[in-house]
Image 1: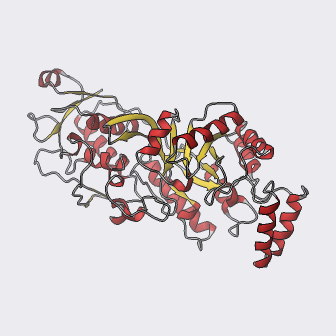
Image 2: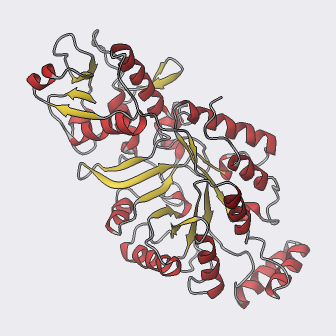
Image 3: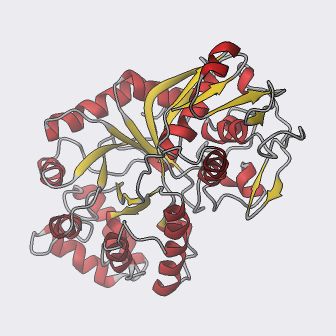
Length: 436
């Protein structure tokens, strides 16, 4: 166990050191503010503060982990080896030239998303507003990289220190915005869609729509057995998120009460873990969220533990507080749909820290790495695979979790890019236990 001396043990200090030490590096950590206890400890130890106590392993701090609430923070990103960092420190005895703990806290808590920023048309925090995008390190899991720098220093100082290393894992996600393209859409929607296809001279789509409505052809969005069959052949941790919100301008799925819709959700849940794709309105409305959660629980006959917000919109901190109140355990919304990378700077699941209340919550946040929209639509299959391999190799180096997001529509014949099935199979069949 690593003992950390700090003059004041704040919730921020505890949260950050536990993520870096325990969740990333597999090292138990404890804290003390008593010099006598620190001196008496005969195992690995360090101090964190403005000044060292003596000749111990020392990491200089900035003020962030000892403050409350959120304020404008001066960020100066500086190159550091093969990566970058911020919150530079100057003490000659400091073991690292940056306060990686404060920098990690800033990214993990999404501190910058609480500060004034320009939202996009859906009210989301855009990737271009982030310091990671602006300084070119969005594509690097910097918190994990910094943690491994910290690990090297600990190993150099304490050669017998033991880390319980986690393993690189792949966790694909399917985002089900519309369960069916044509099937069960109702007369008015079907006529409207058919007329639109005729106007655009999509004659084959009109023909397929009619065949599906007559029940002589499978709906093109009903690609779920493709994933289920992969699951049967090679067990992999996979999640499908179904939308069961009411019909609106932004939510176009068929009714949650439709028997065919419910049948598909139940069928999938027998083979693959399922979660709730939280509708746009439910993201900020507790009662709507509660209703949608009840709907999916009544279909699958089990408690719903997983969430993913429509359009990957995260309204901090309200949405996460609502998830906690309804006992949702894990959220998978943390990422940018059109920018691959690491929104929170990490590829390790982490706990949501509420900056208003200054408390670590029980909600686990999983940061996804990429969606299909993350890649230039003109790219071919080979290029996409190479980029995916690049991200997987980065994550392997820090024993992290690779989460790509797909949709059922990507695998359909309606998609002009026919290679996404192959891409999904390529990811599915990757070895998790090999490092390149």
